[in-house]
Length: 171
Image 1 (tube, rainbow, N blue to C red):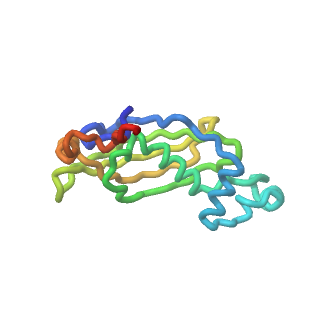
Image 2: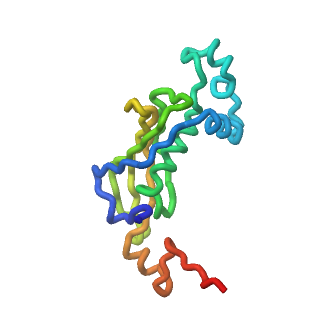
Image 3: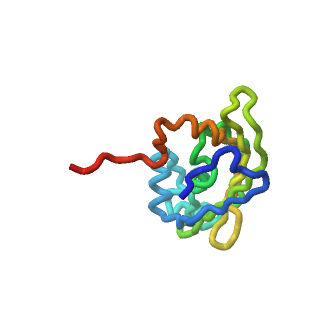
């Protein structure tokens, strides 16, 4: 199974649908909030959300949804990346709630060879996240630096594929 793509394998306009989706639990949301020290009651306090918010229930913290979609895209987009260069834009366009299932897809917007290093290129993509009803909840654009296939092949010592490490024989 392929993990990521070389520069030559990206085509402008290609759409990669990321699978499987992920159902967001209350635990996922609270753990992410606690790990990132985001203690806003909209995410953590059911009574507060019910009585003081327009949604009348907890809203999943947006950065978790962004991180989830970014992770979903790795096998298709940045699995071979040299570097994630930038996030150009990030929009949370609809709320996500506990129990929603998130699905993602990424479109290749542009690609260009590096001006300073001939062994790589920069790929611009847009990733969109949808809930189980097809409502878009998050969209972001980013640039990823990826190697060219020729460079990667030349960098492999003695034919050992770094993506498929070998293990010593058991004793």
